[in-house]
Every structure is written in structure tokens, then in C-alpha cells.
Figure 1 (spheres, rainbow, N blue to C red):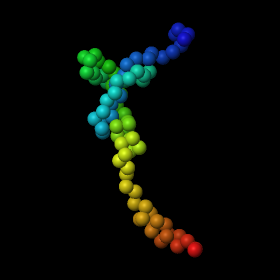
Figure 2: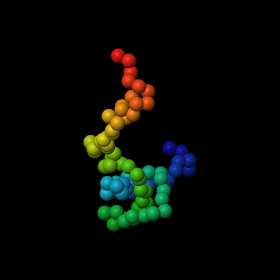
Figure 3: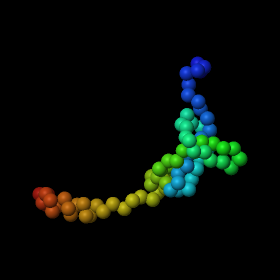
Figure 4: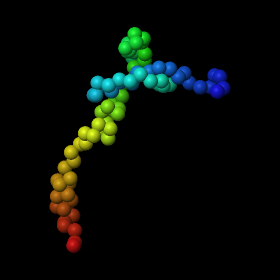
Length: 83
């Protein structure tokens, strides 16, 4: 690697507040907030809206979609399709 052209790569904590989940990893991202981690060191903290702990694909919890209501609304608007 050429010296002086790469961004600073350092430990950072990413926290998903909705799932009460945090992970310590390395990143070039920075933040003004810090958190004291389990090892006693202080790391930059980046809050994320969604992570593998709260994403429906990974958790298996899917959102219920009212497809019947959507179909009925379509049929009212455009009529019943020909058979």
C-alpha cells in the first residue's frame, strides 16, 4: 500500500438502538459520539437505523401487507379483469 493516500482505518462501534445491538468493527467512518466498550477502551459510536439484528430478512419477522385490500381497491378503480 502506498503511504499517505489511504484514509484512517480504525475501530468503531456500530449500534442499532431498535434491537439493542452493538458491534465493534473496523471502519473509516468517524463520529463525534463515543462509547466505552466491554474491554474498557473508548471508541467512536455510529448509530444505524437497521442492522442484521433488526432487519426482517435476517430475523424472519416479516411485515403483514394488506394485499386483499389492495386487490379490492384495484378492482373498484379499474373494474374486474376479463376472464
